[in-house]
Length: 247
Image (cartoon, rainbow, N blue to C red; front, top):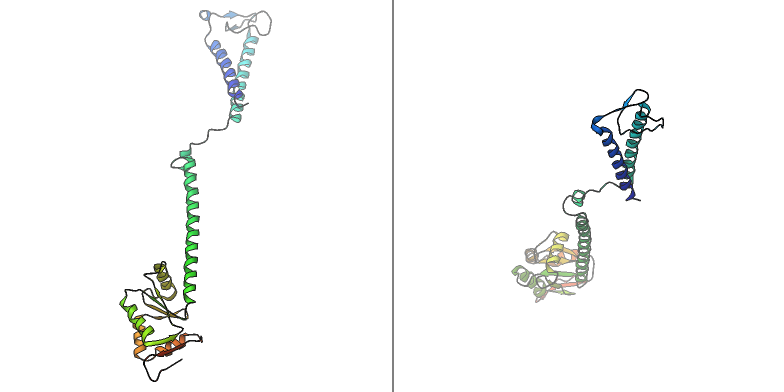
């Protein structure tokens, strides 16, 4: 059906143009024929009313035929436009840059990539939180340290050698742990302390090496641990002292 409309249009248009061309360019050197009613007409205009001569009636009929041809041509054009949809814009105009398919694929890939990144981030956060929870279950006292850090070494010397703590503190060397950097960053978010050592009691930070050394010098380290223990059972005393202070 879609192909027939243009063909019909061309046929009507050809007939229309041939007729109009013949009427506008008379043959026989421009001679005219006087009709029986005393009117002149184009030689190509035929005797349409059958009265034996070409007269005004025939000219009127010719004009009416021309009008009908024009109307038919316009109807054919309108019909062709209705059956044949408008040509769509090119993909470049639709998308802006590149093909439409390419643009859609890029957007699709962007959305898929974004979703995958979000899923990966969620899994990473879950793994980190799970790891921290497992660490906190090891002991009431956790020492987040780095094996090469002198401040960490001093804090471990005080808590592991000068004092006896039961259950003993659990040490996490962040430079040797596969999630060390992420753990340190998360501790910075949770405690506000982004450096090591980070000494935590009952999931709360007591500070670093300087704080431990200062409390030890003031003989208040055991009291501090007791206040932060949350009533949980543990013992802490100084080693090599005849009169130990226990909790």
